[in-house]
Image (cartoon, rainbow, N blue to C red; front, side):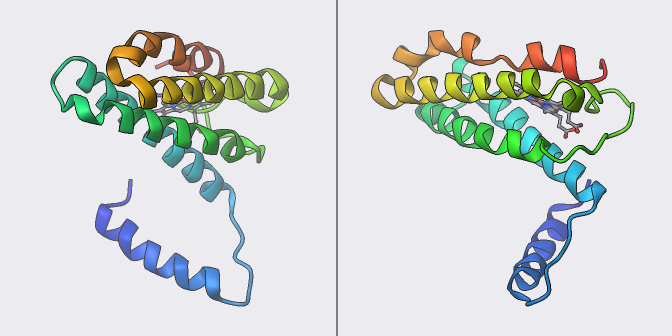
Amino acid sequence: MSSLKNIIGGLAMAATVALAPMAAHADDQDTIDYRKHVMATLGAQAAALFMTLQQKAPAENFAHHVKTLAVTSQQALKAFEPNVEGGTAKGDAMPKVWSNWDDFAGKMNDMVAKLEALDKAAESGGMAAAGSMVKEAFTCKGCHDEYRYAE
Ligand code: HEC
């Protein structure tokens, strides 16, 4: 995993590359890194959200975490579109993601829809309205059990 300093340095460089006339090309490792970054964001935001529910973190941030999850979830399916297998270590994506794409995509879209509904509820009623909907919106494990090598 790159250090934050490298990531920020890389960001400045990526911005330069994006403006350069020659198109840069994503290789297989970029594809894997990209989807892991998106999923890791979901993981960190889910952990932060649970801390607000457990009253170990500011309750005012509950709705912000829900919104971040709803937005990030929309990035996930696109990140998995290129068929690049990620190895067989625990936590890696199984080849089944692509051989069973319609089911995988359906599960991803289902999560996006549920997080969107959660976001709407959190926006209007905060934790009191949306807290009880969190469990149903977190379909993470169902997909991981089927599409990631067991941890
Ligand atoms: C439709 C399937 C699907 C859903 C839904 C899903 N995930 Fe994932 N997730 C995956 C797959 C596949 C990987 C493995 C990606 C890889 O290693 O290339 C993954 C990887 C991860 C990782 C590890 C990232 C890394 O750095 O290696 C985290 C954390 C994660 N998911 C969190 C979540 C959370 C939290 C949710 C629910 C809010 C969620 N996921 C919902 C399929 C899913």
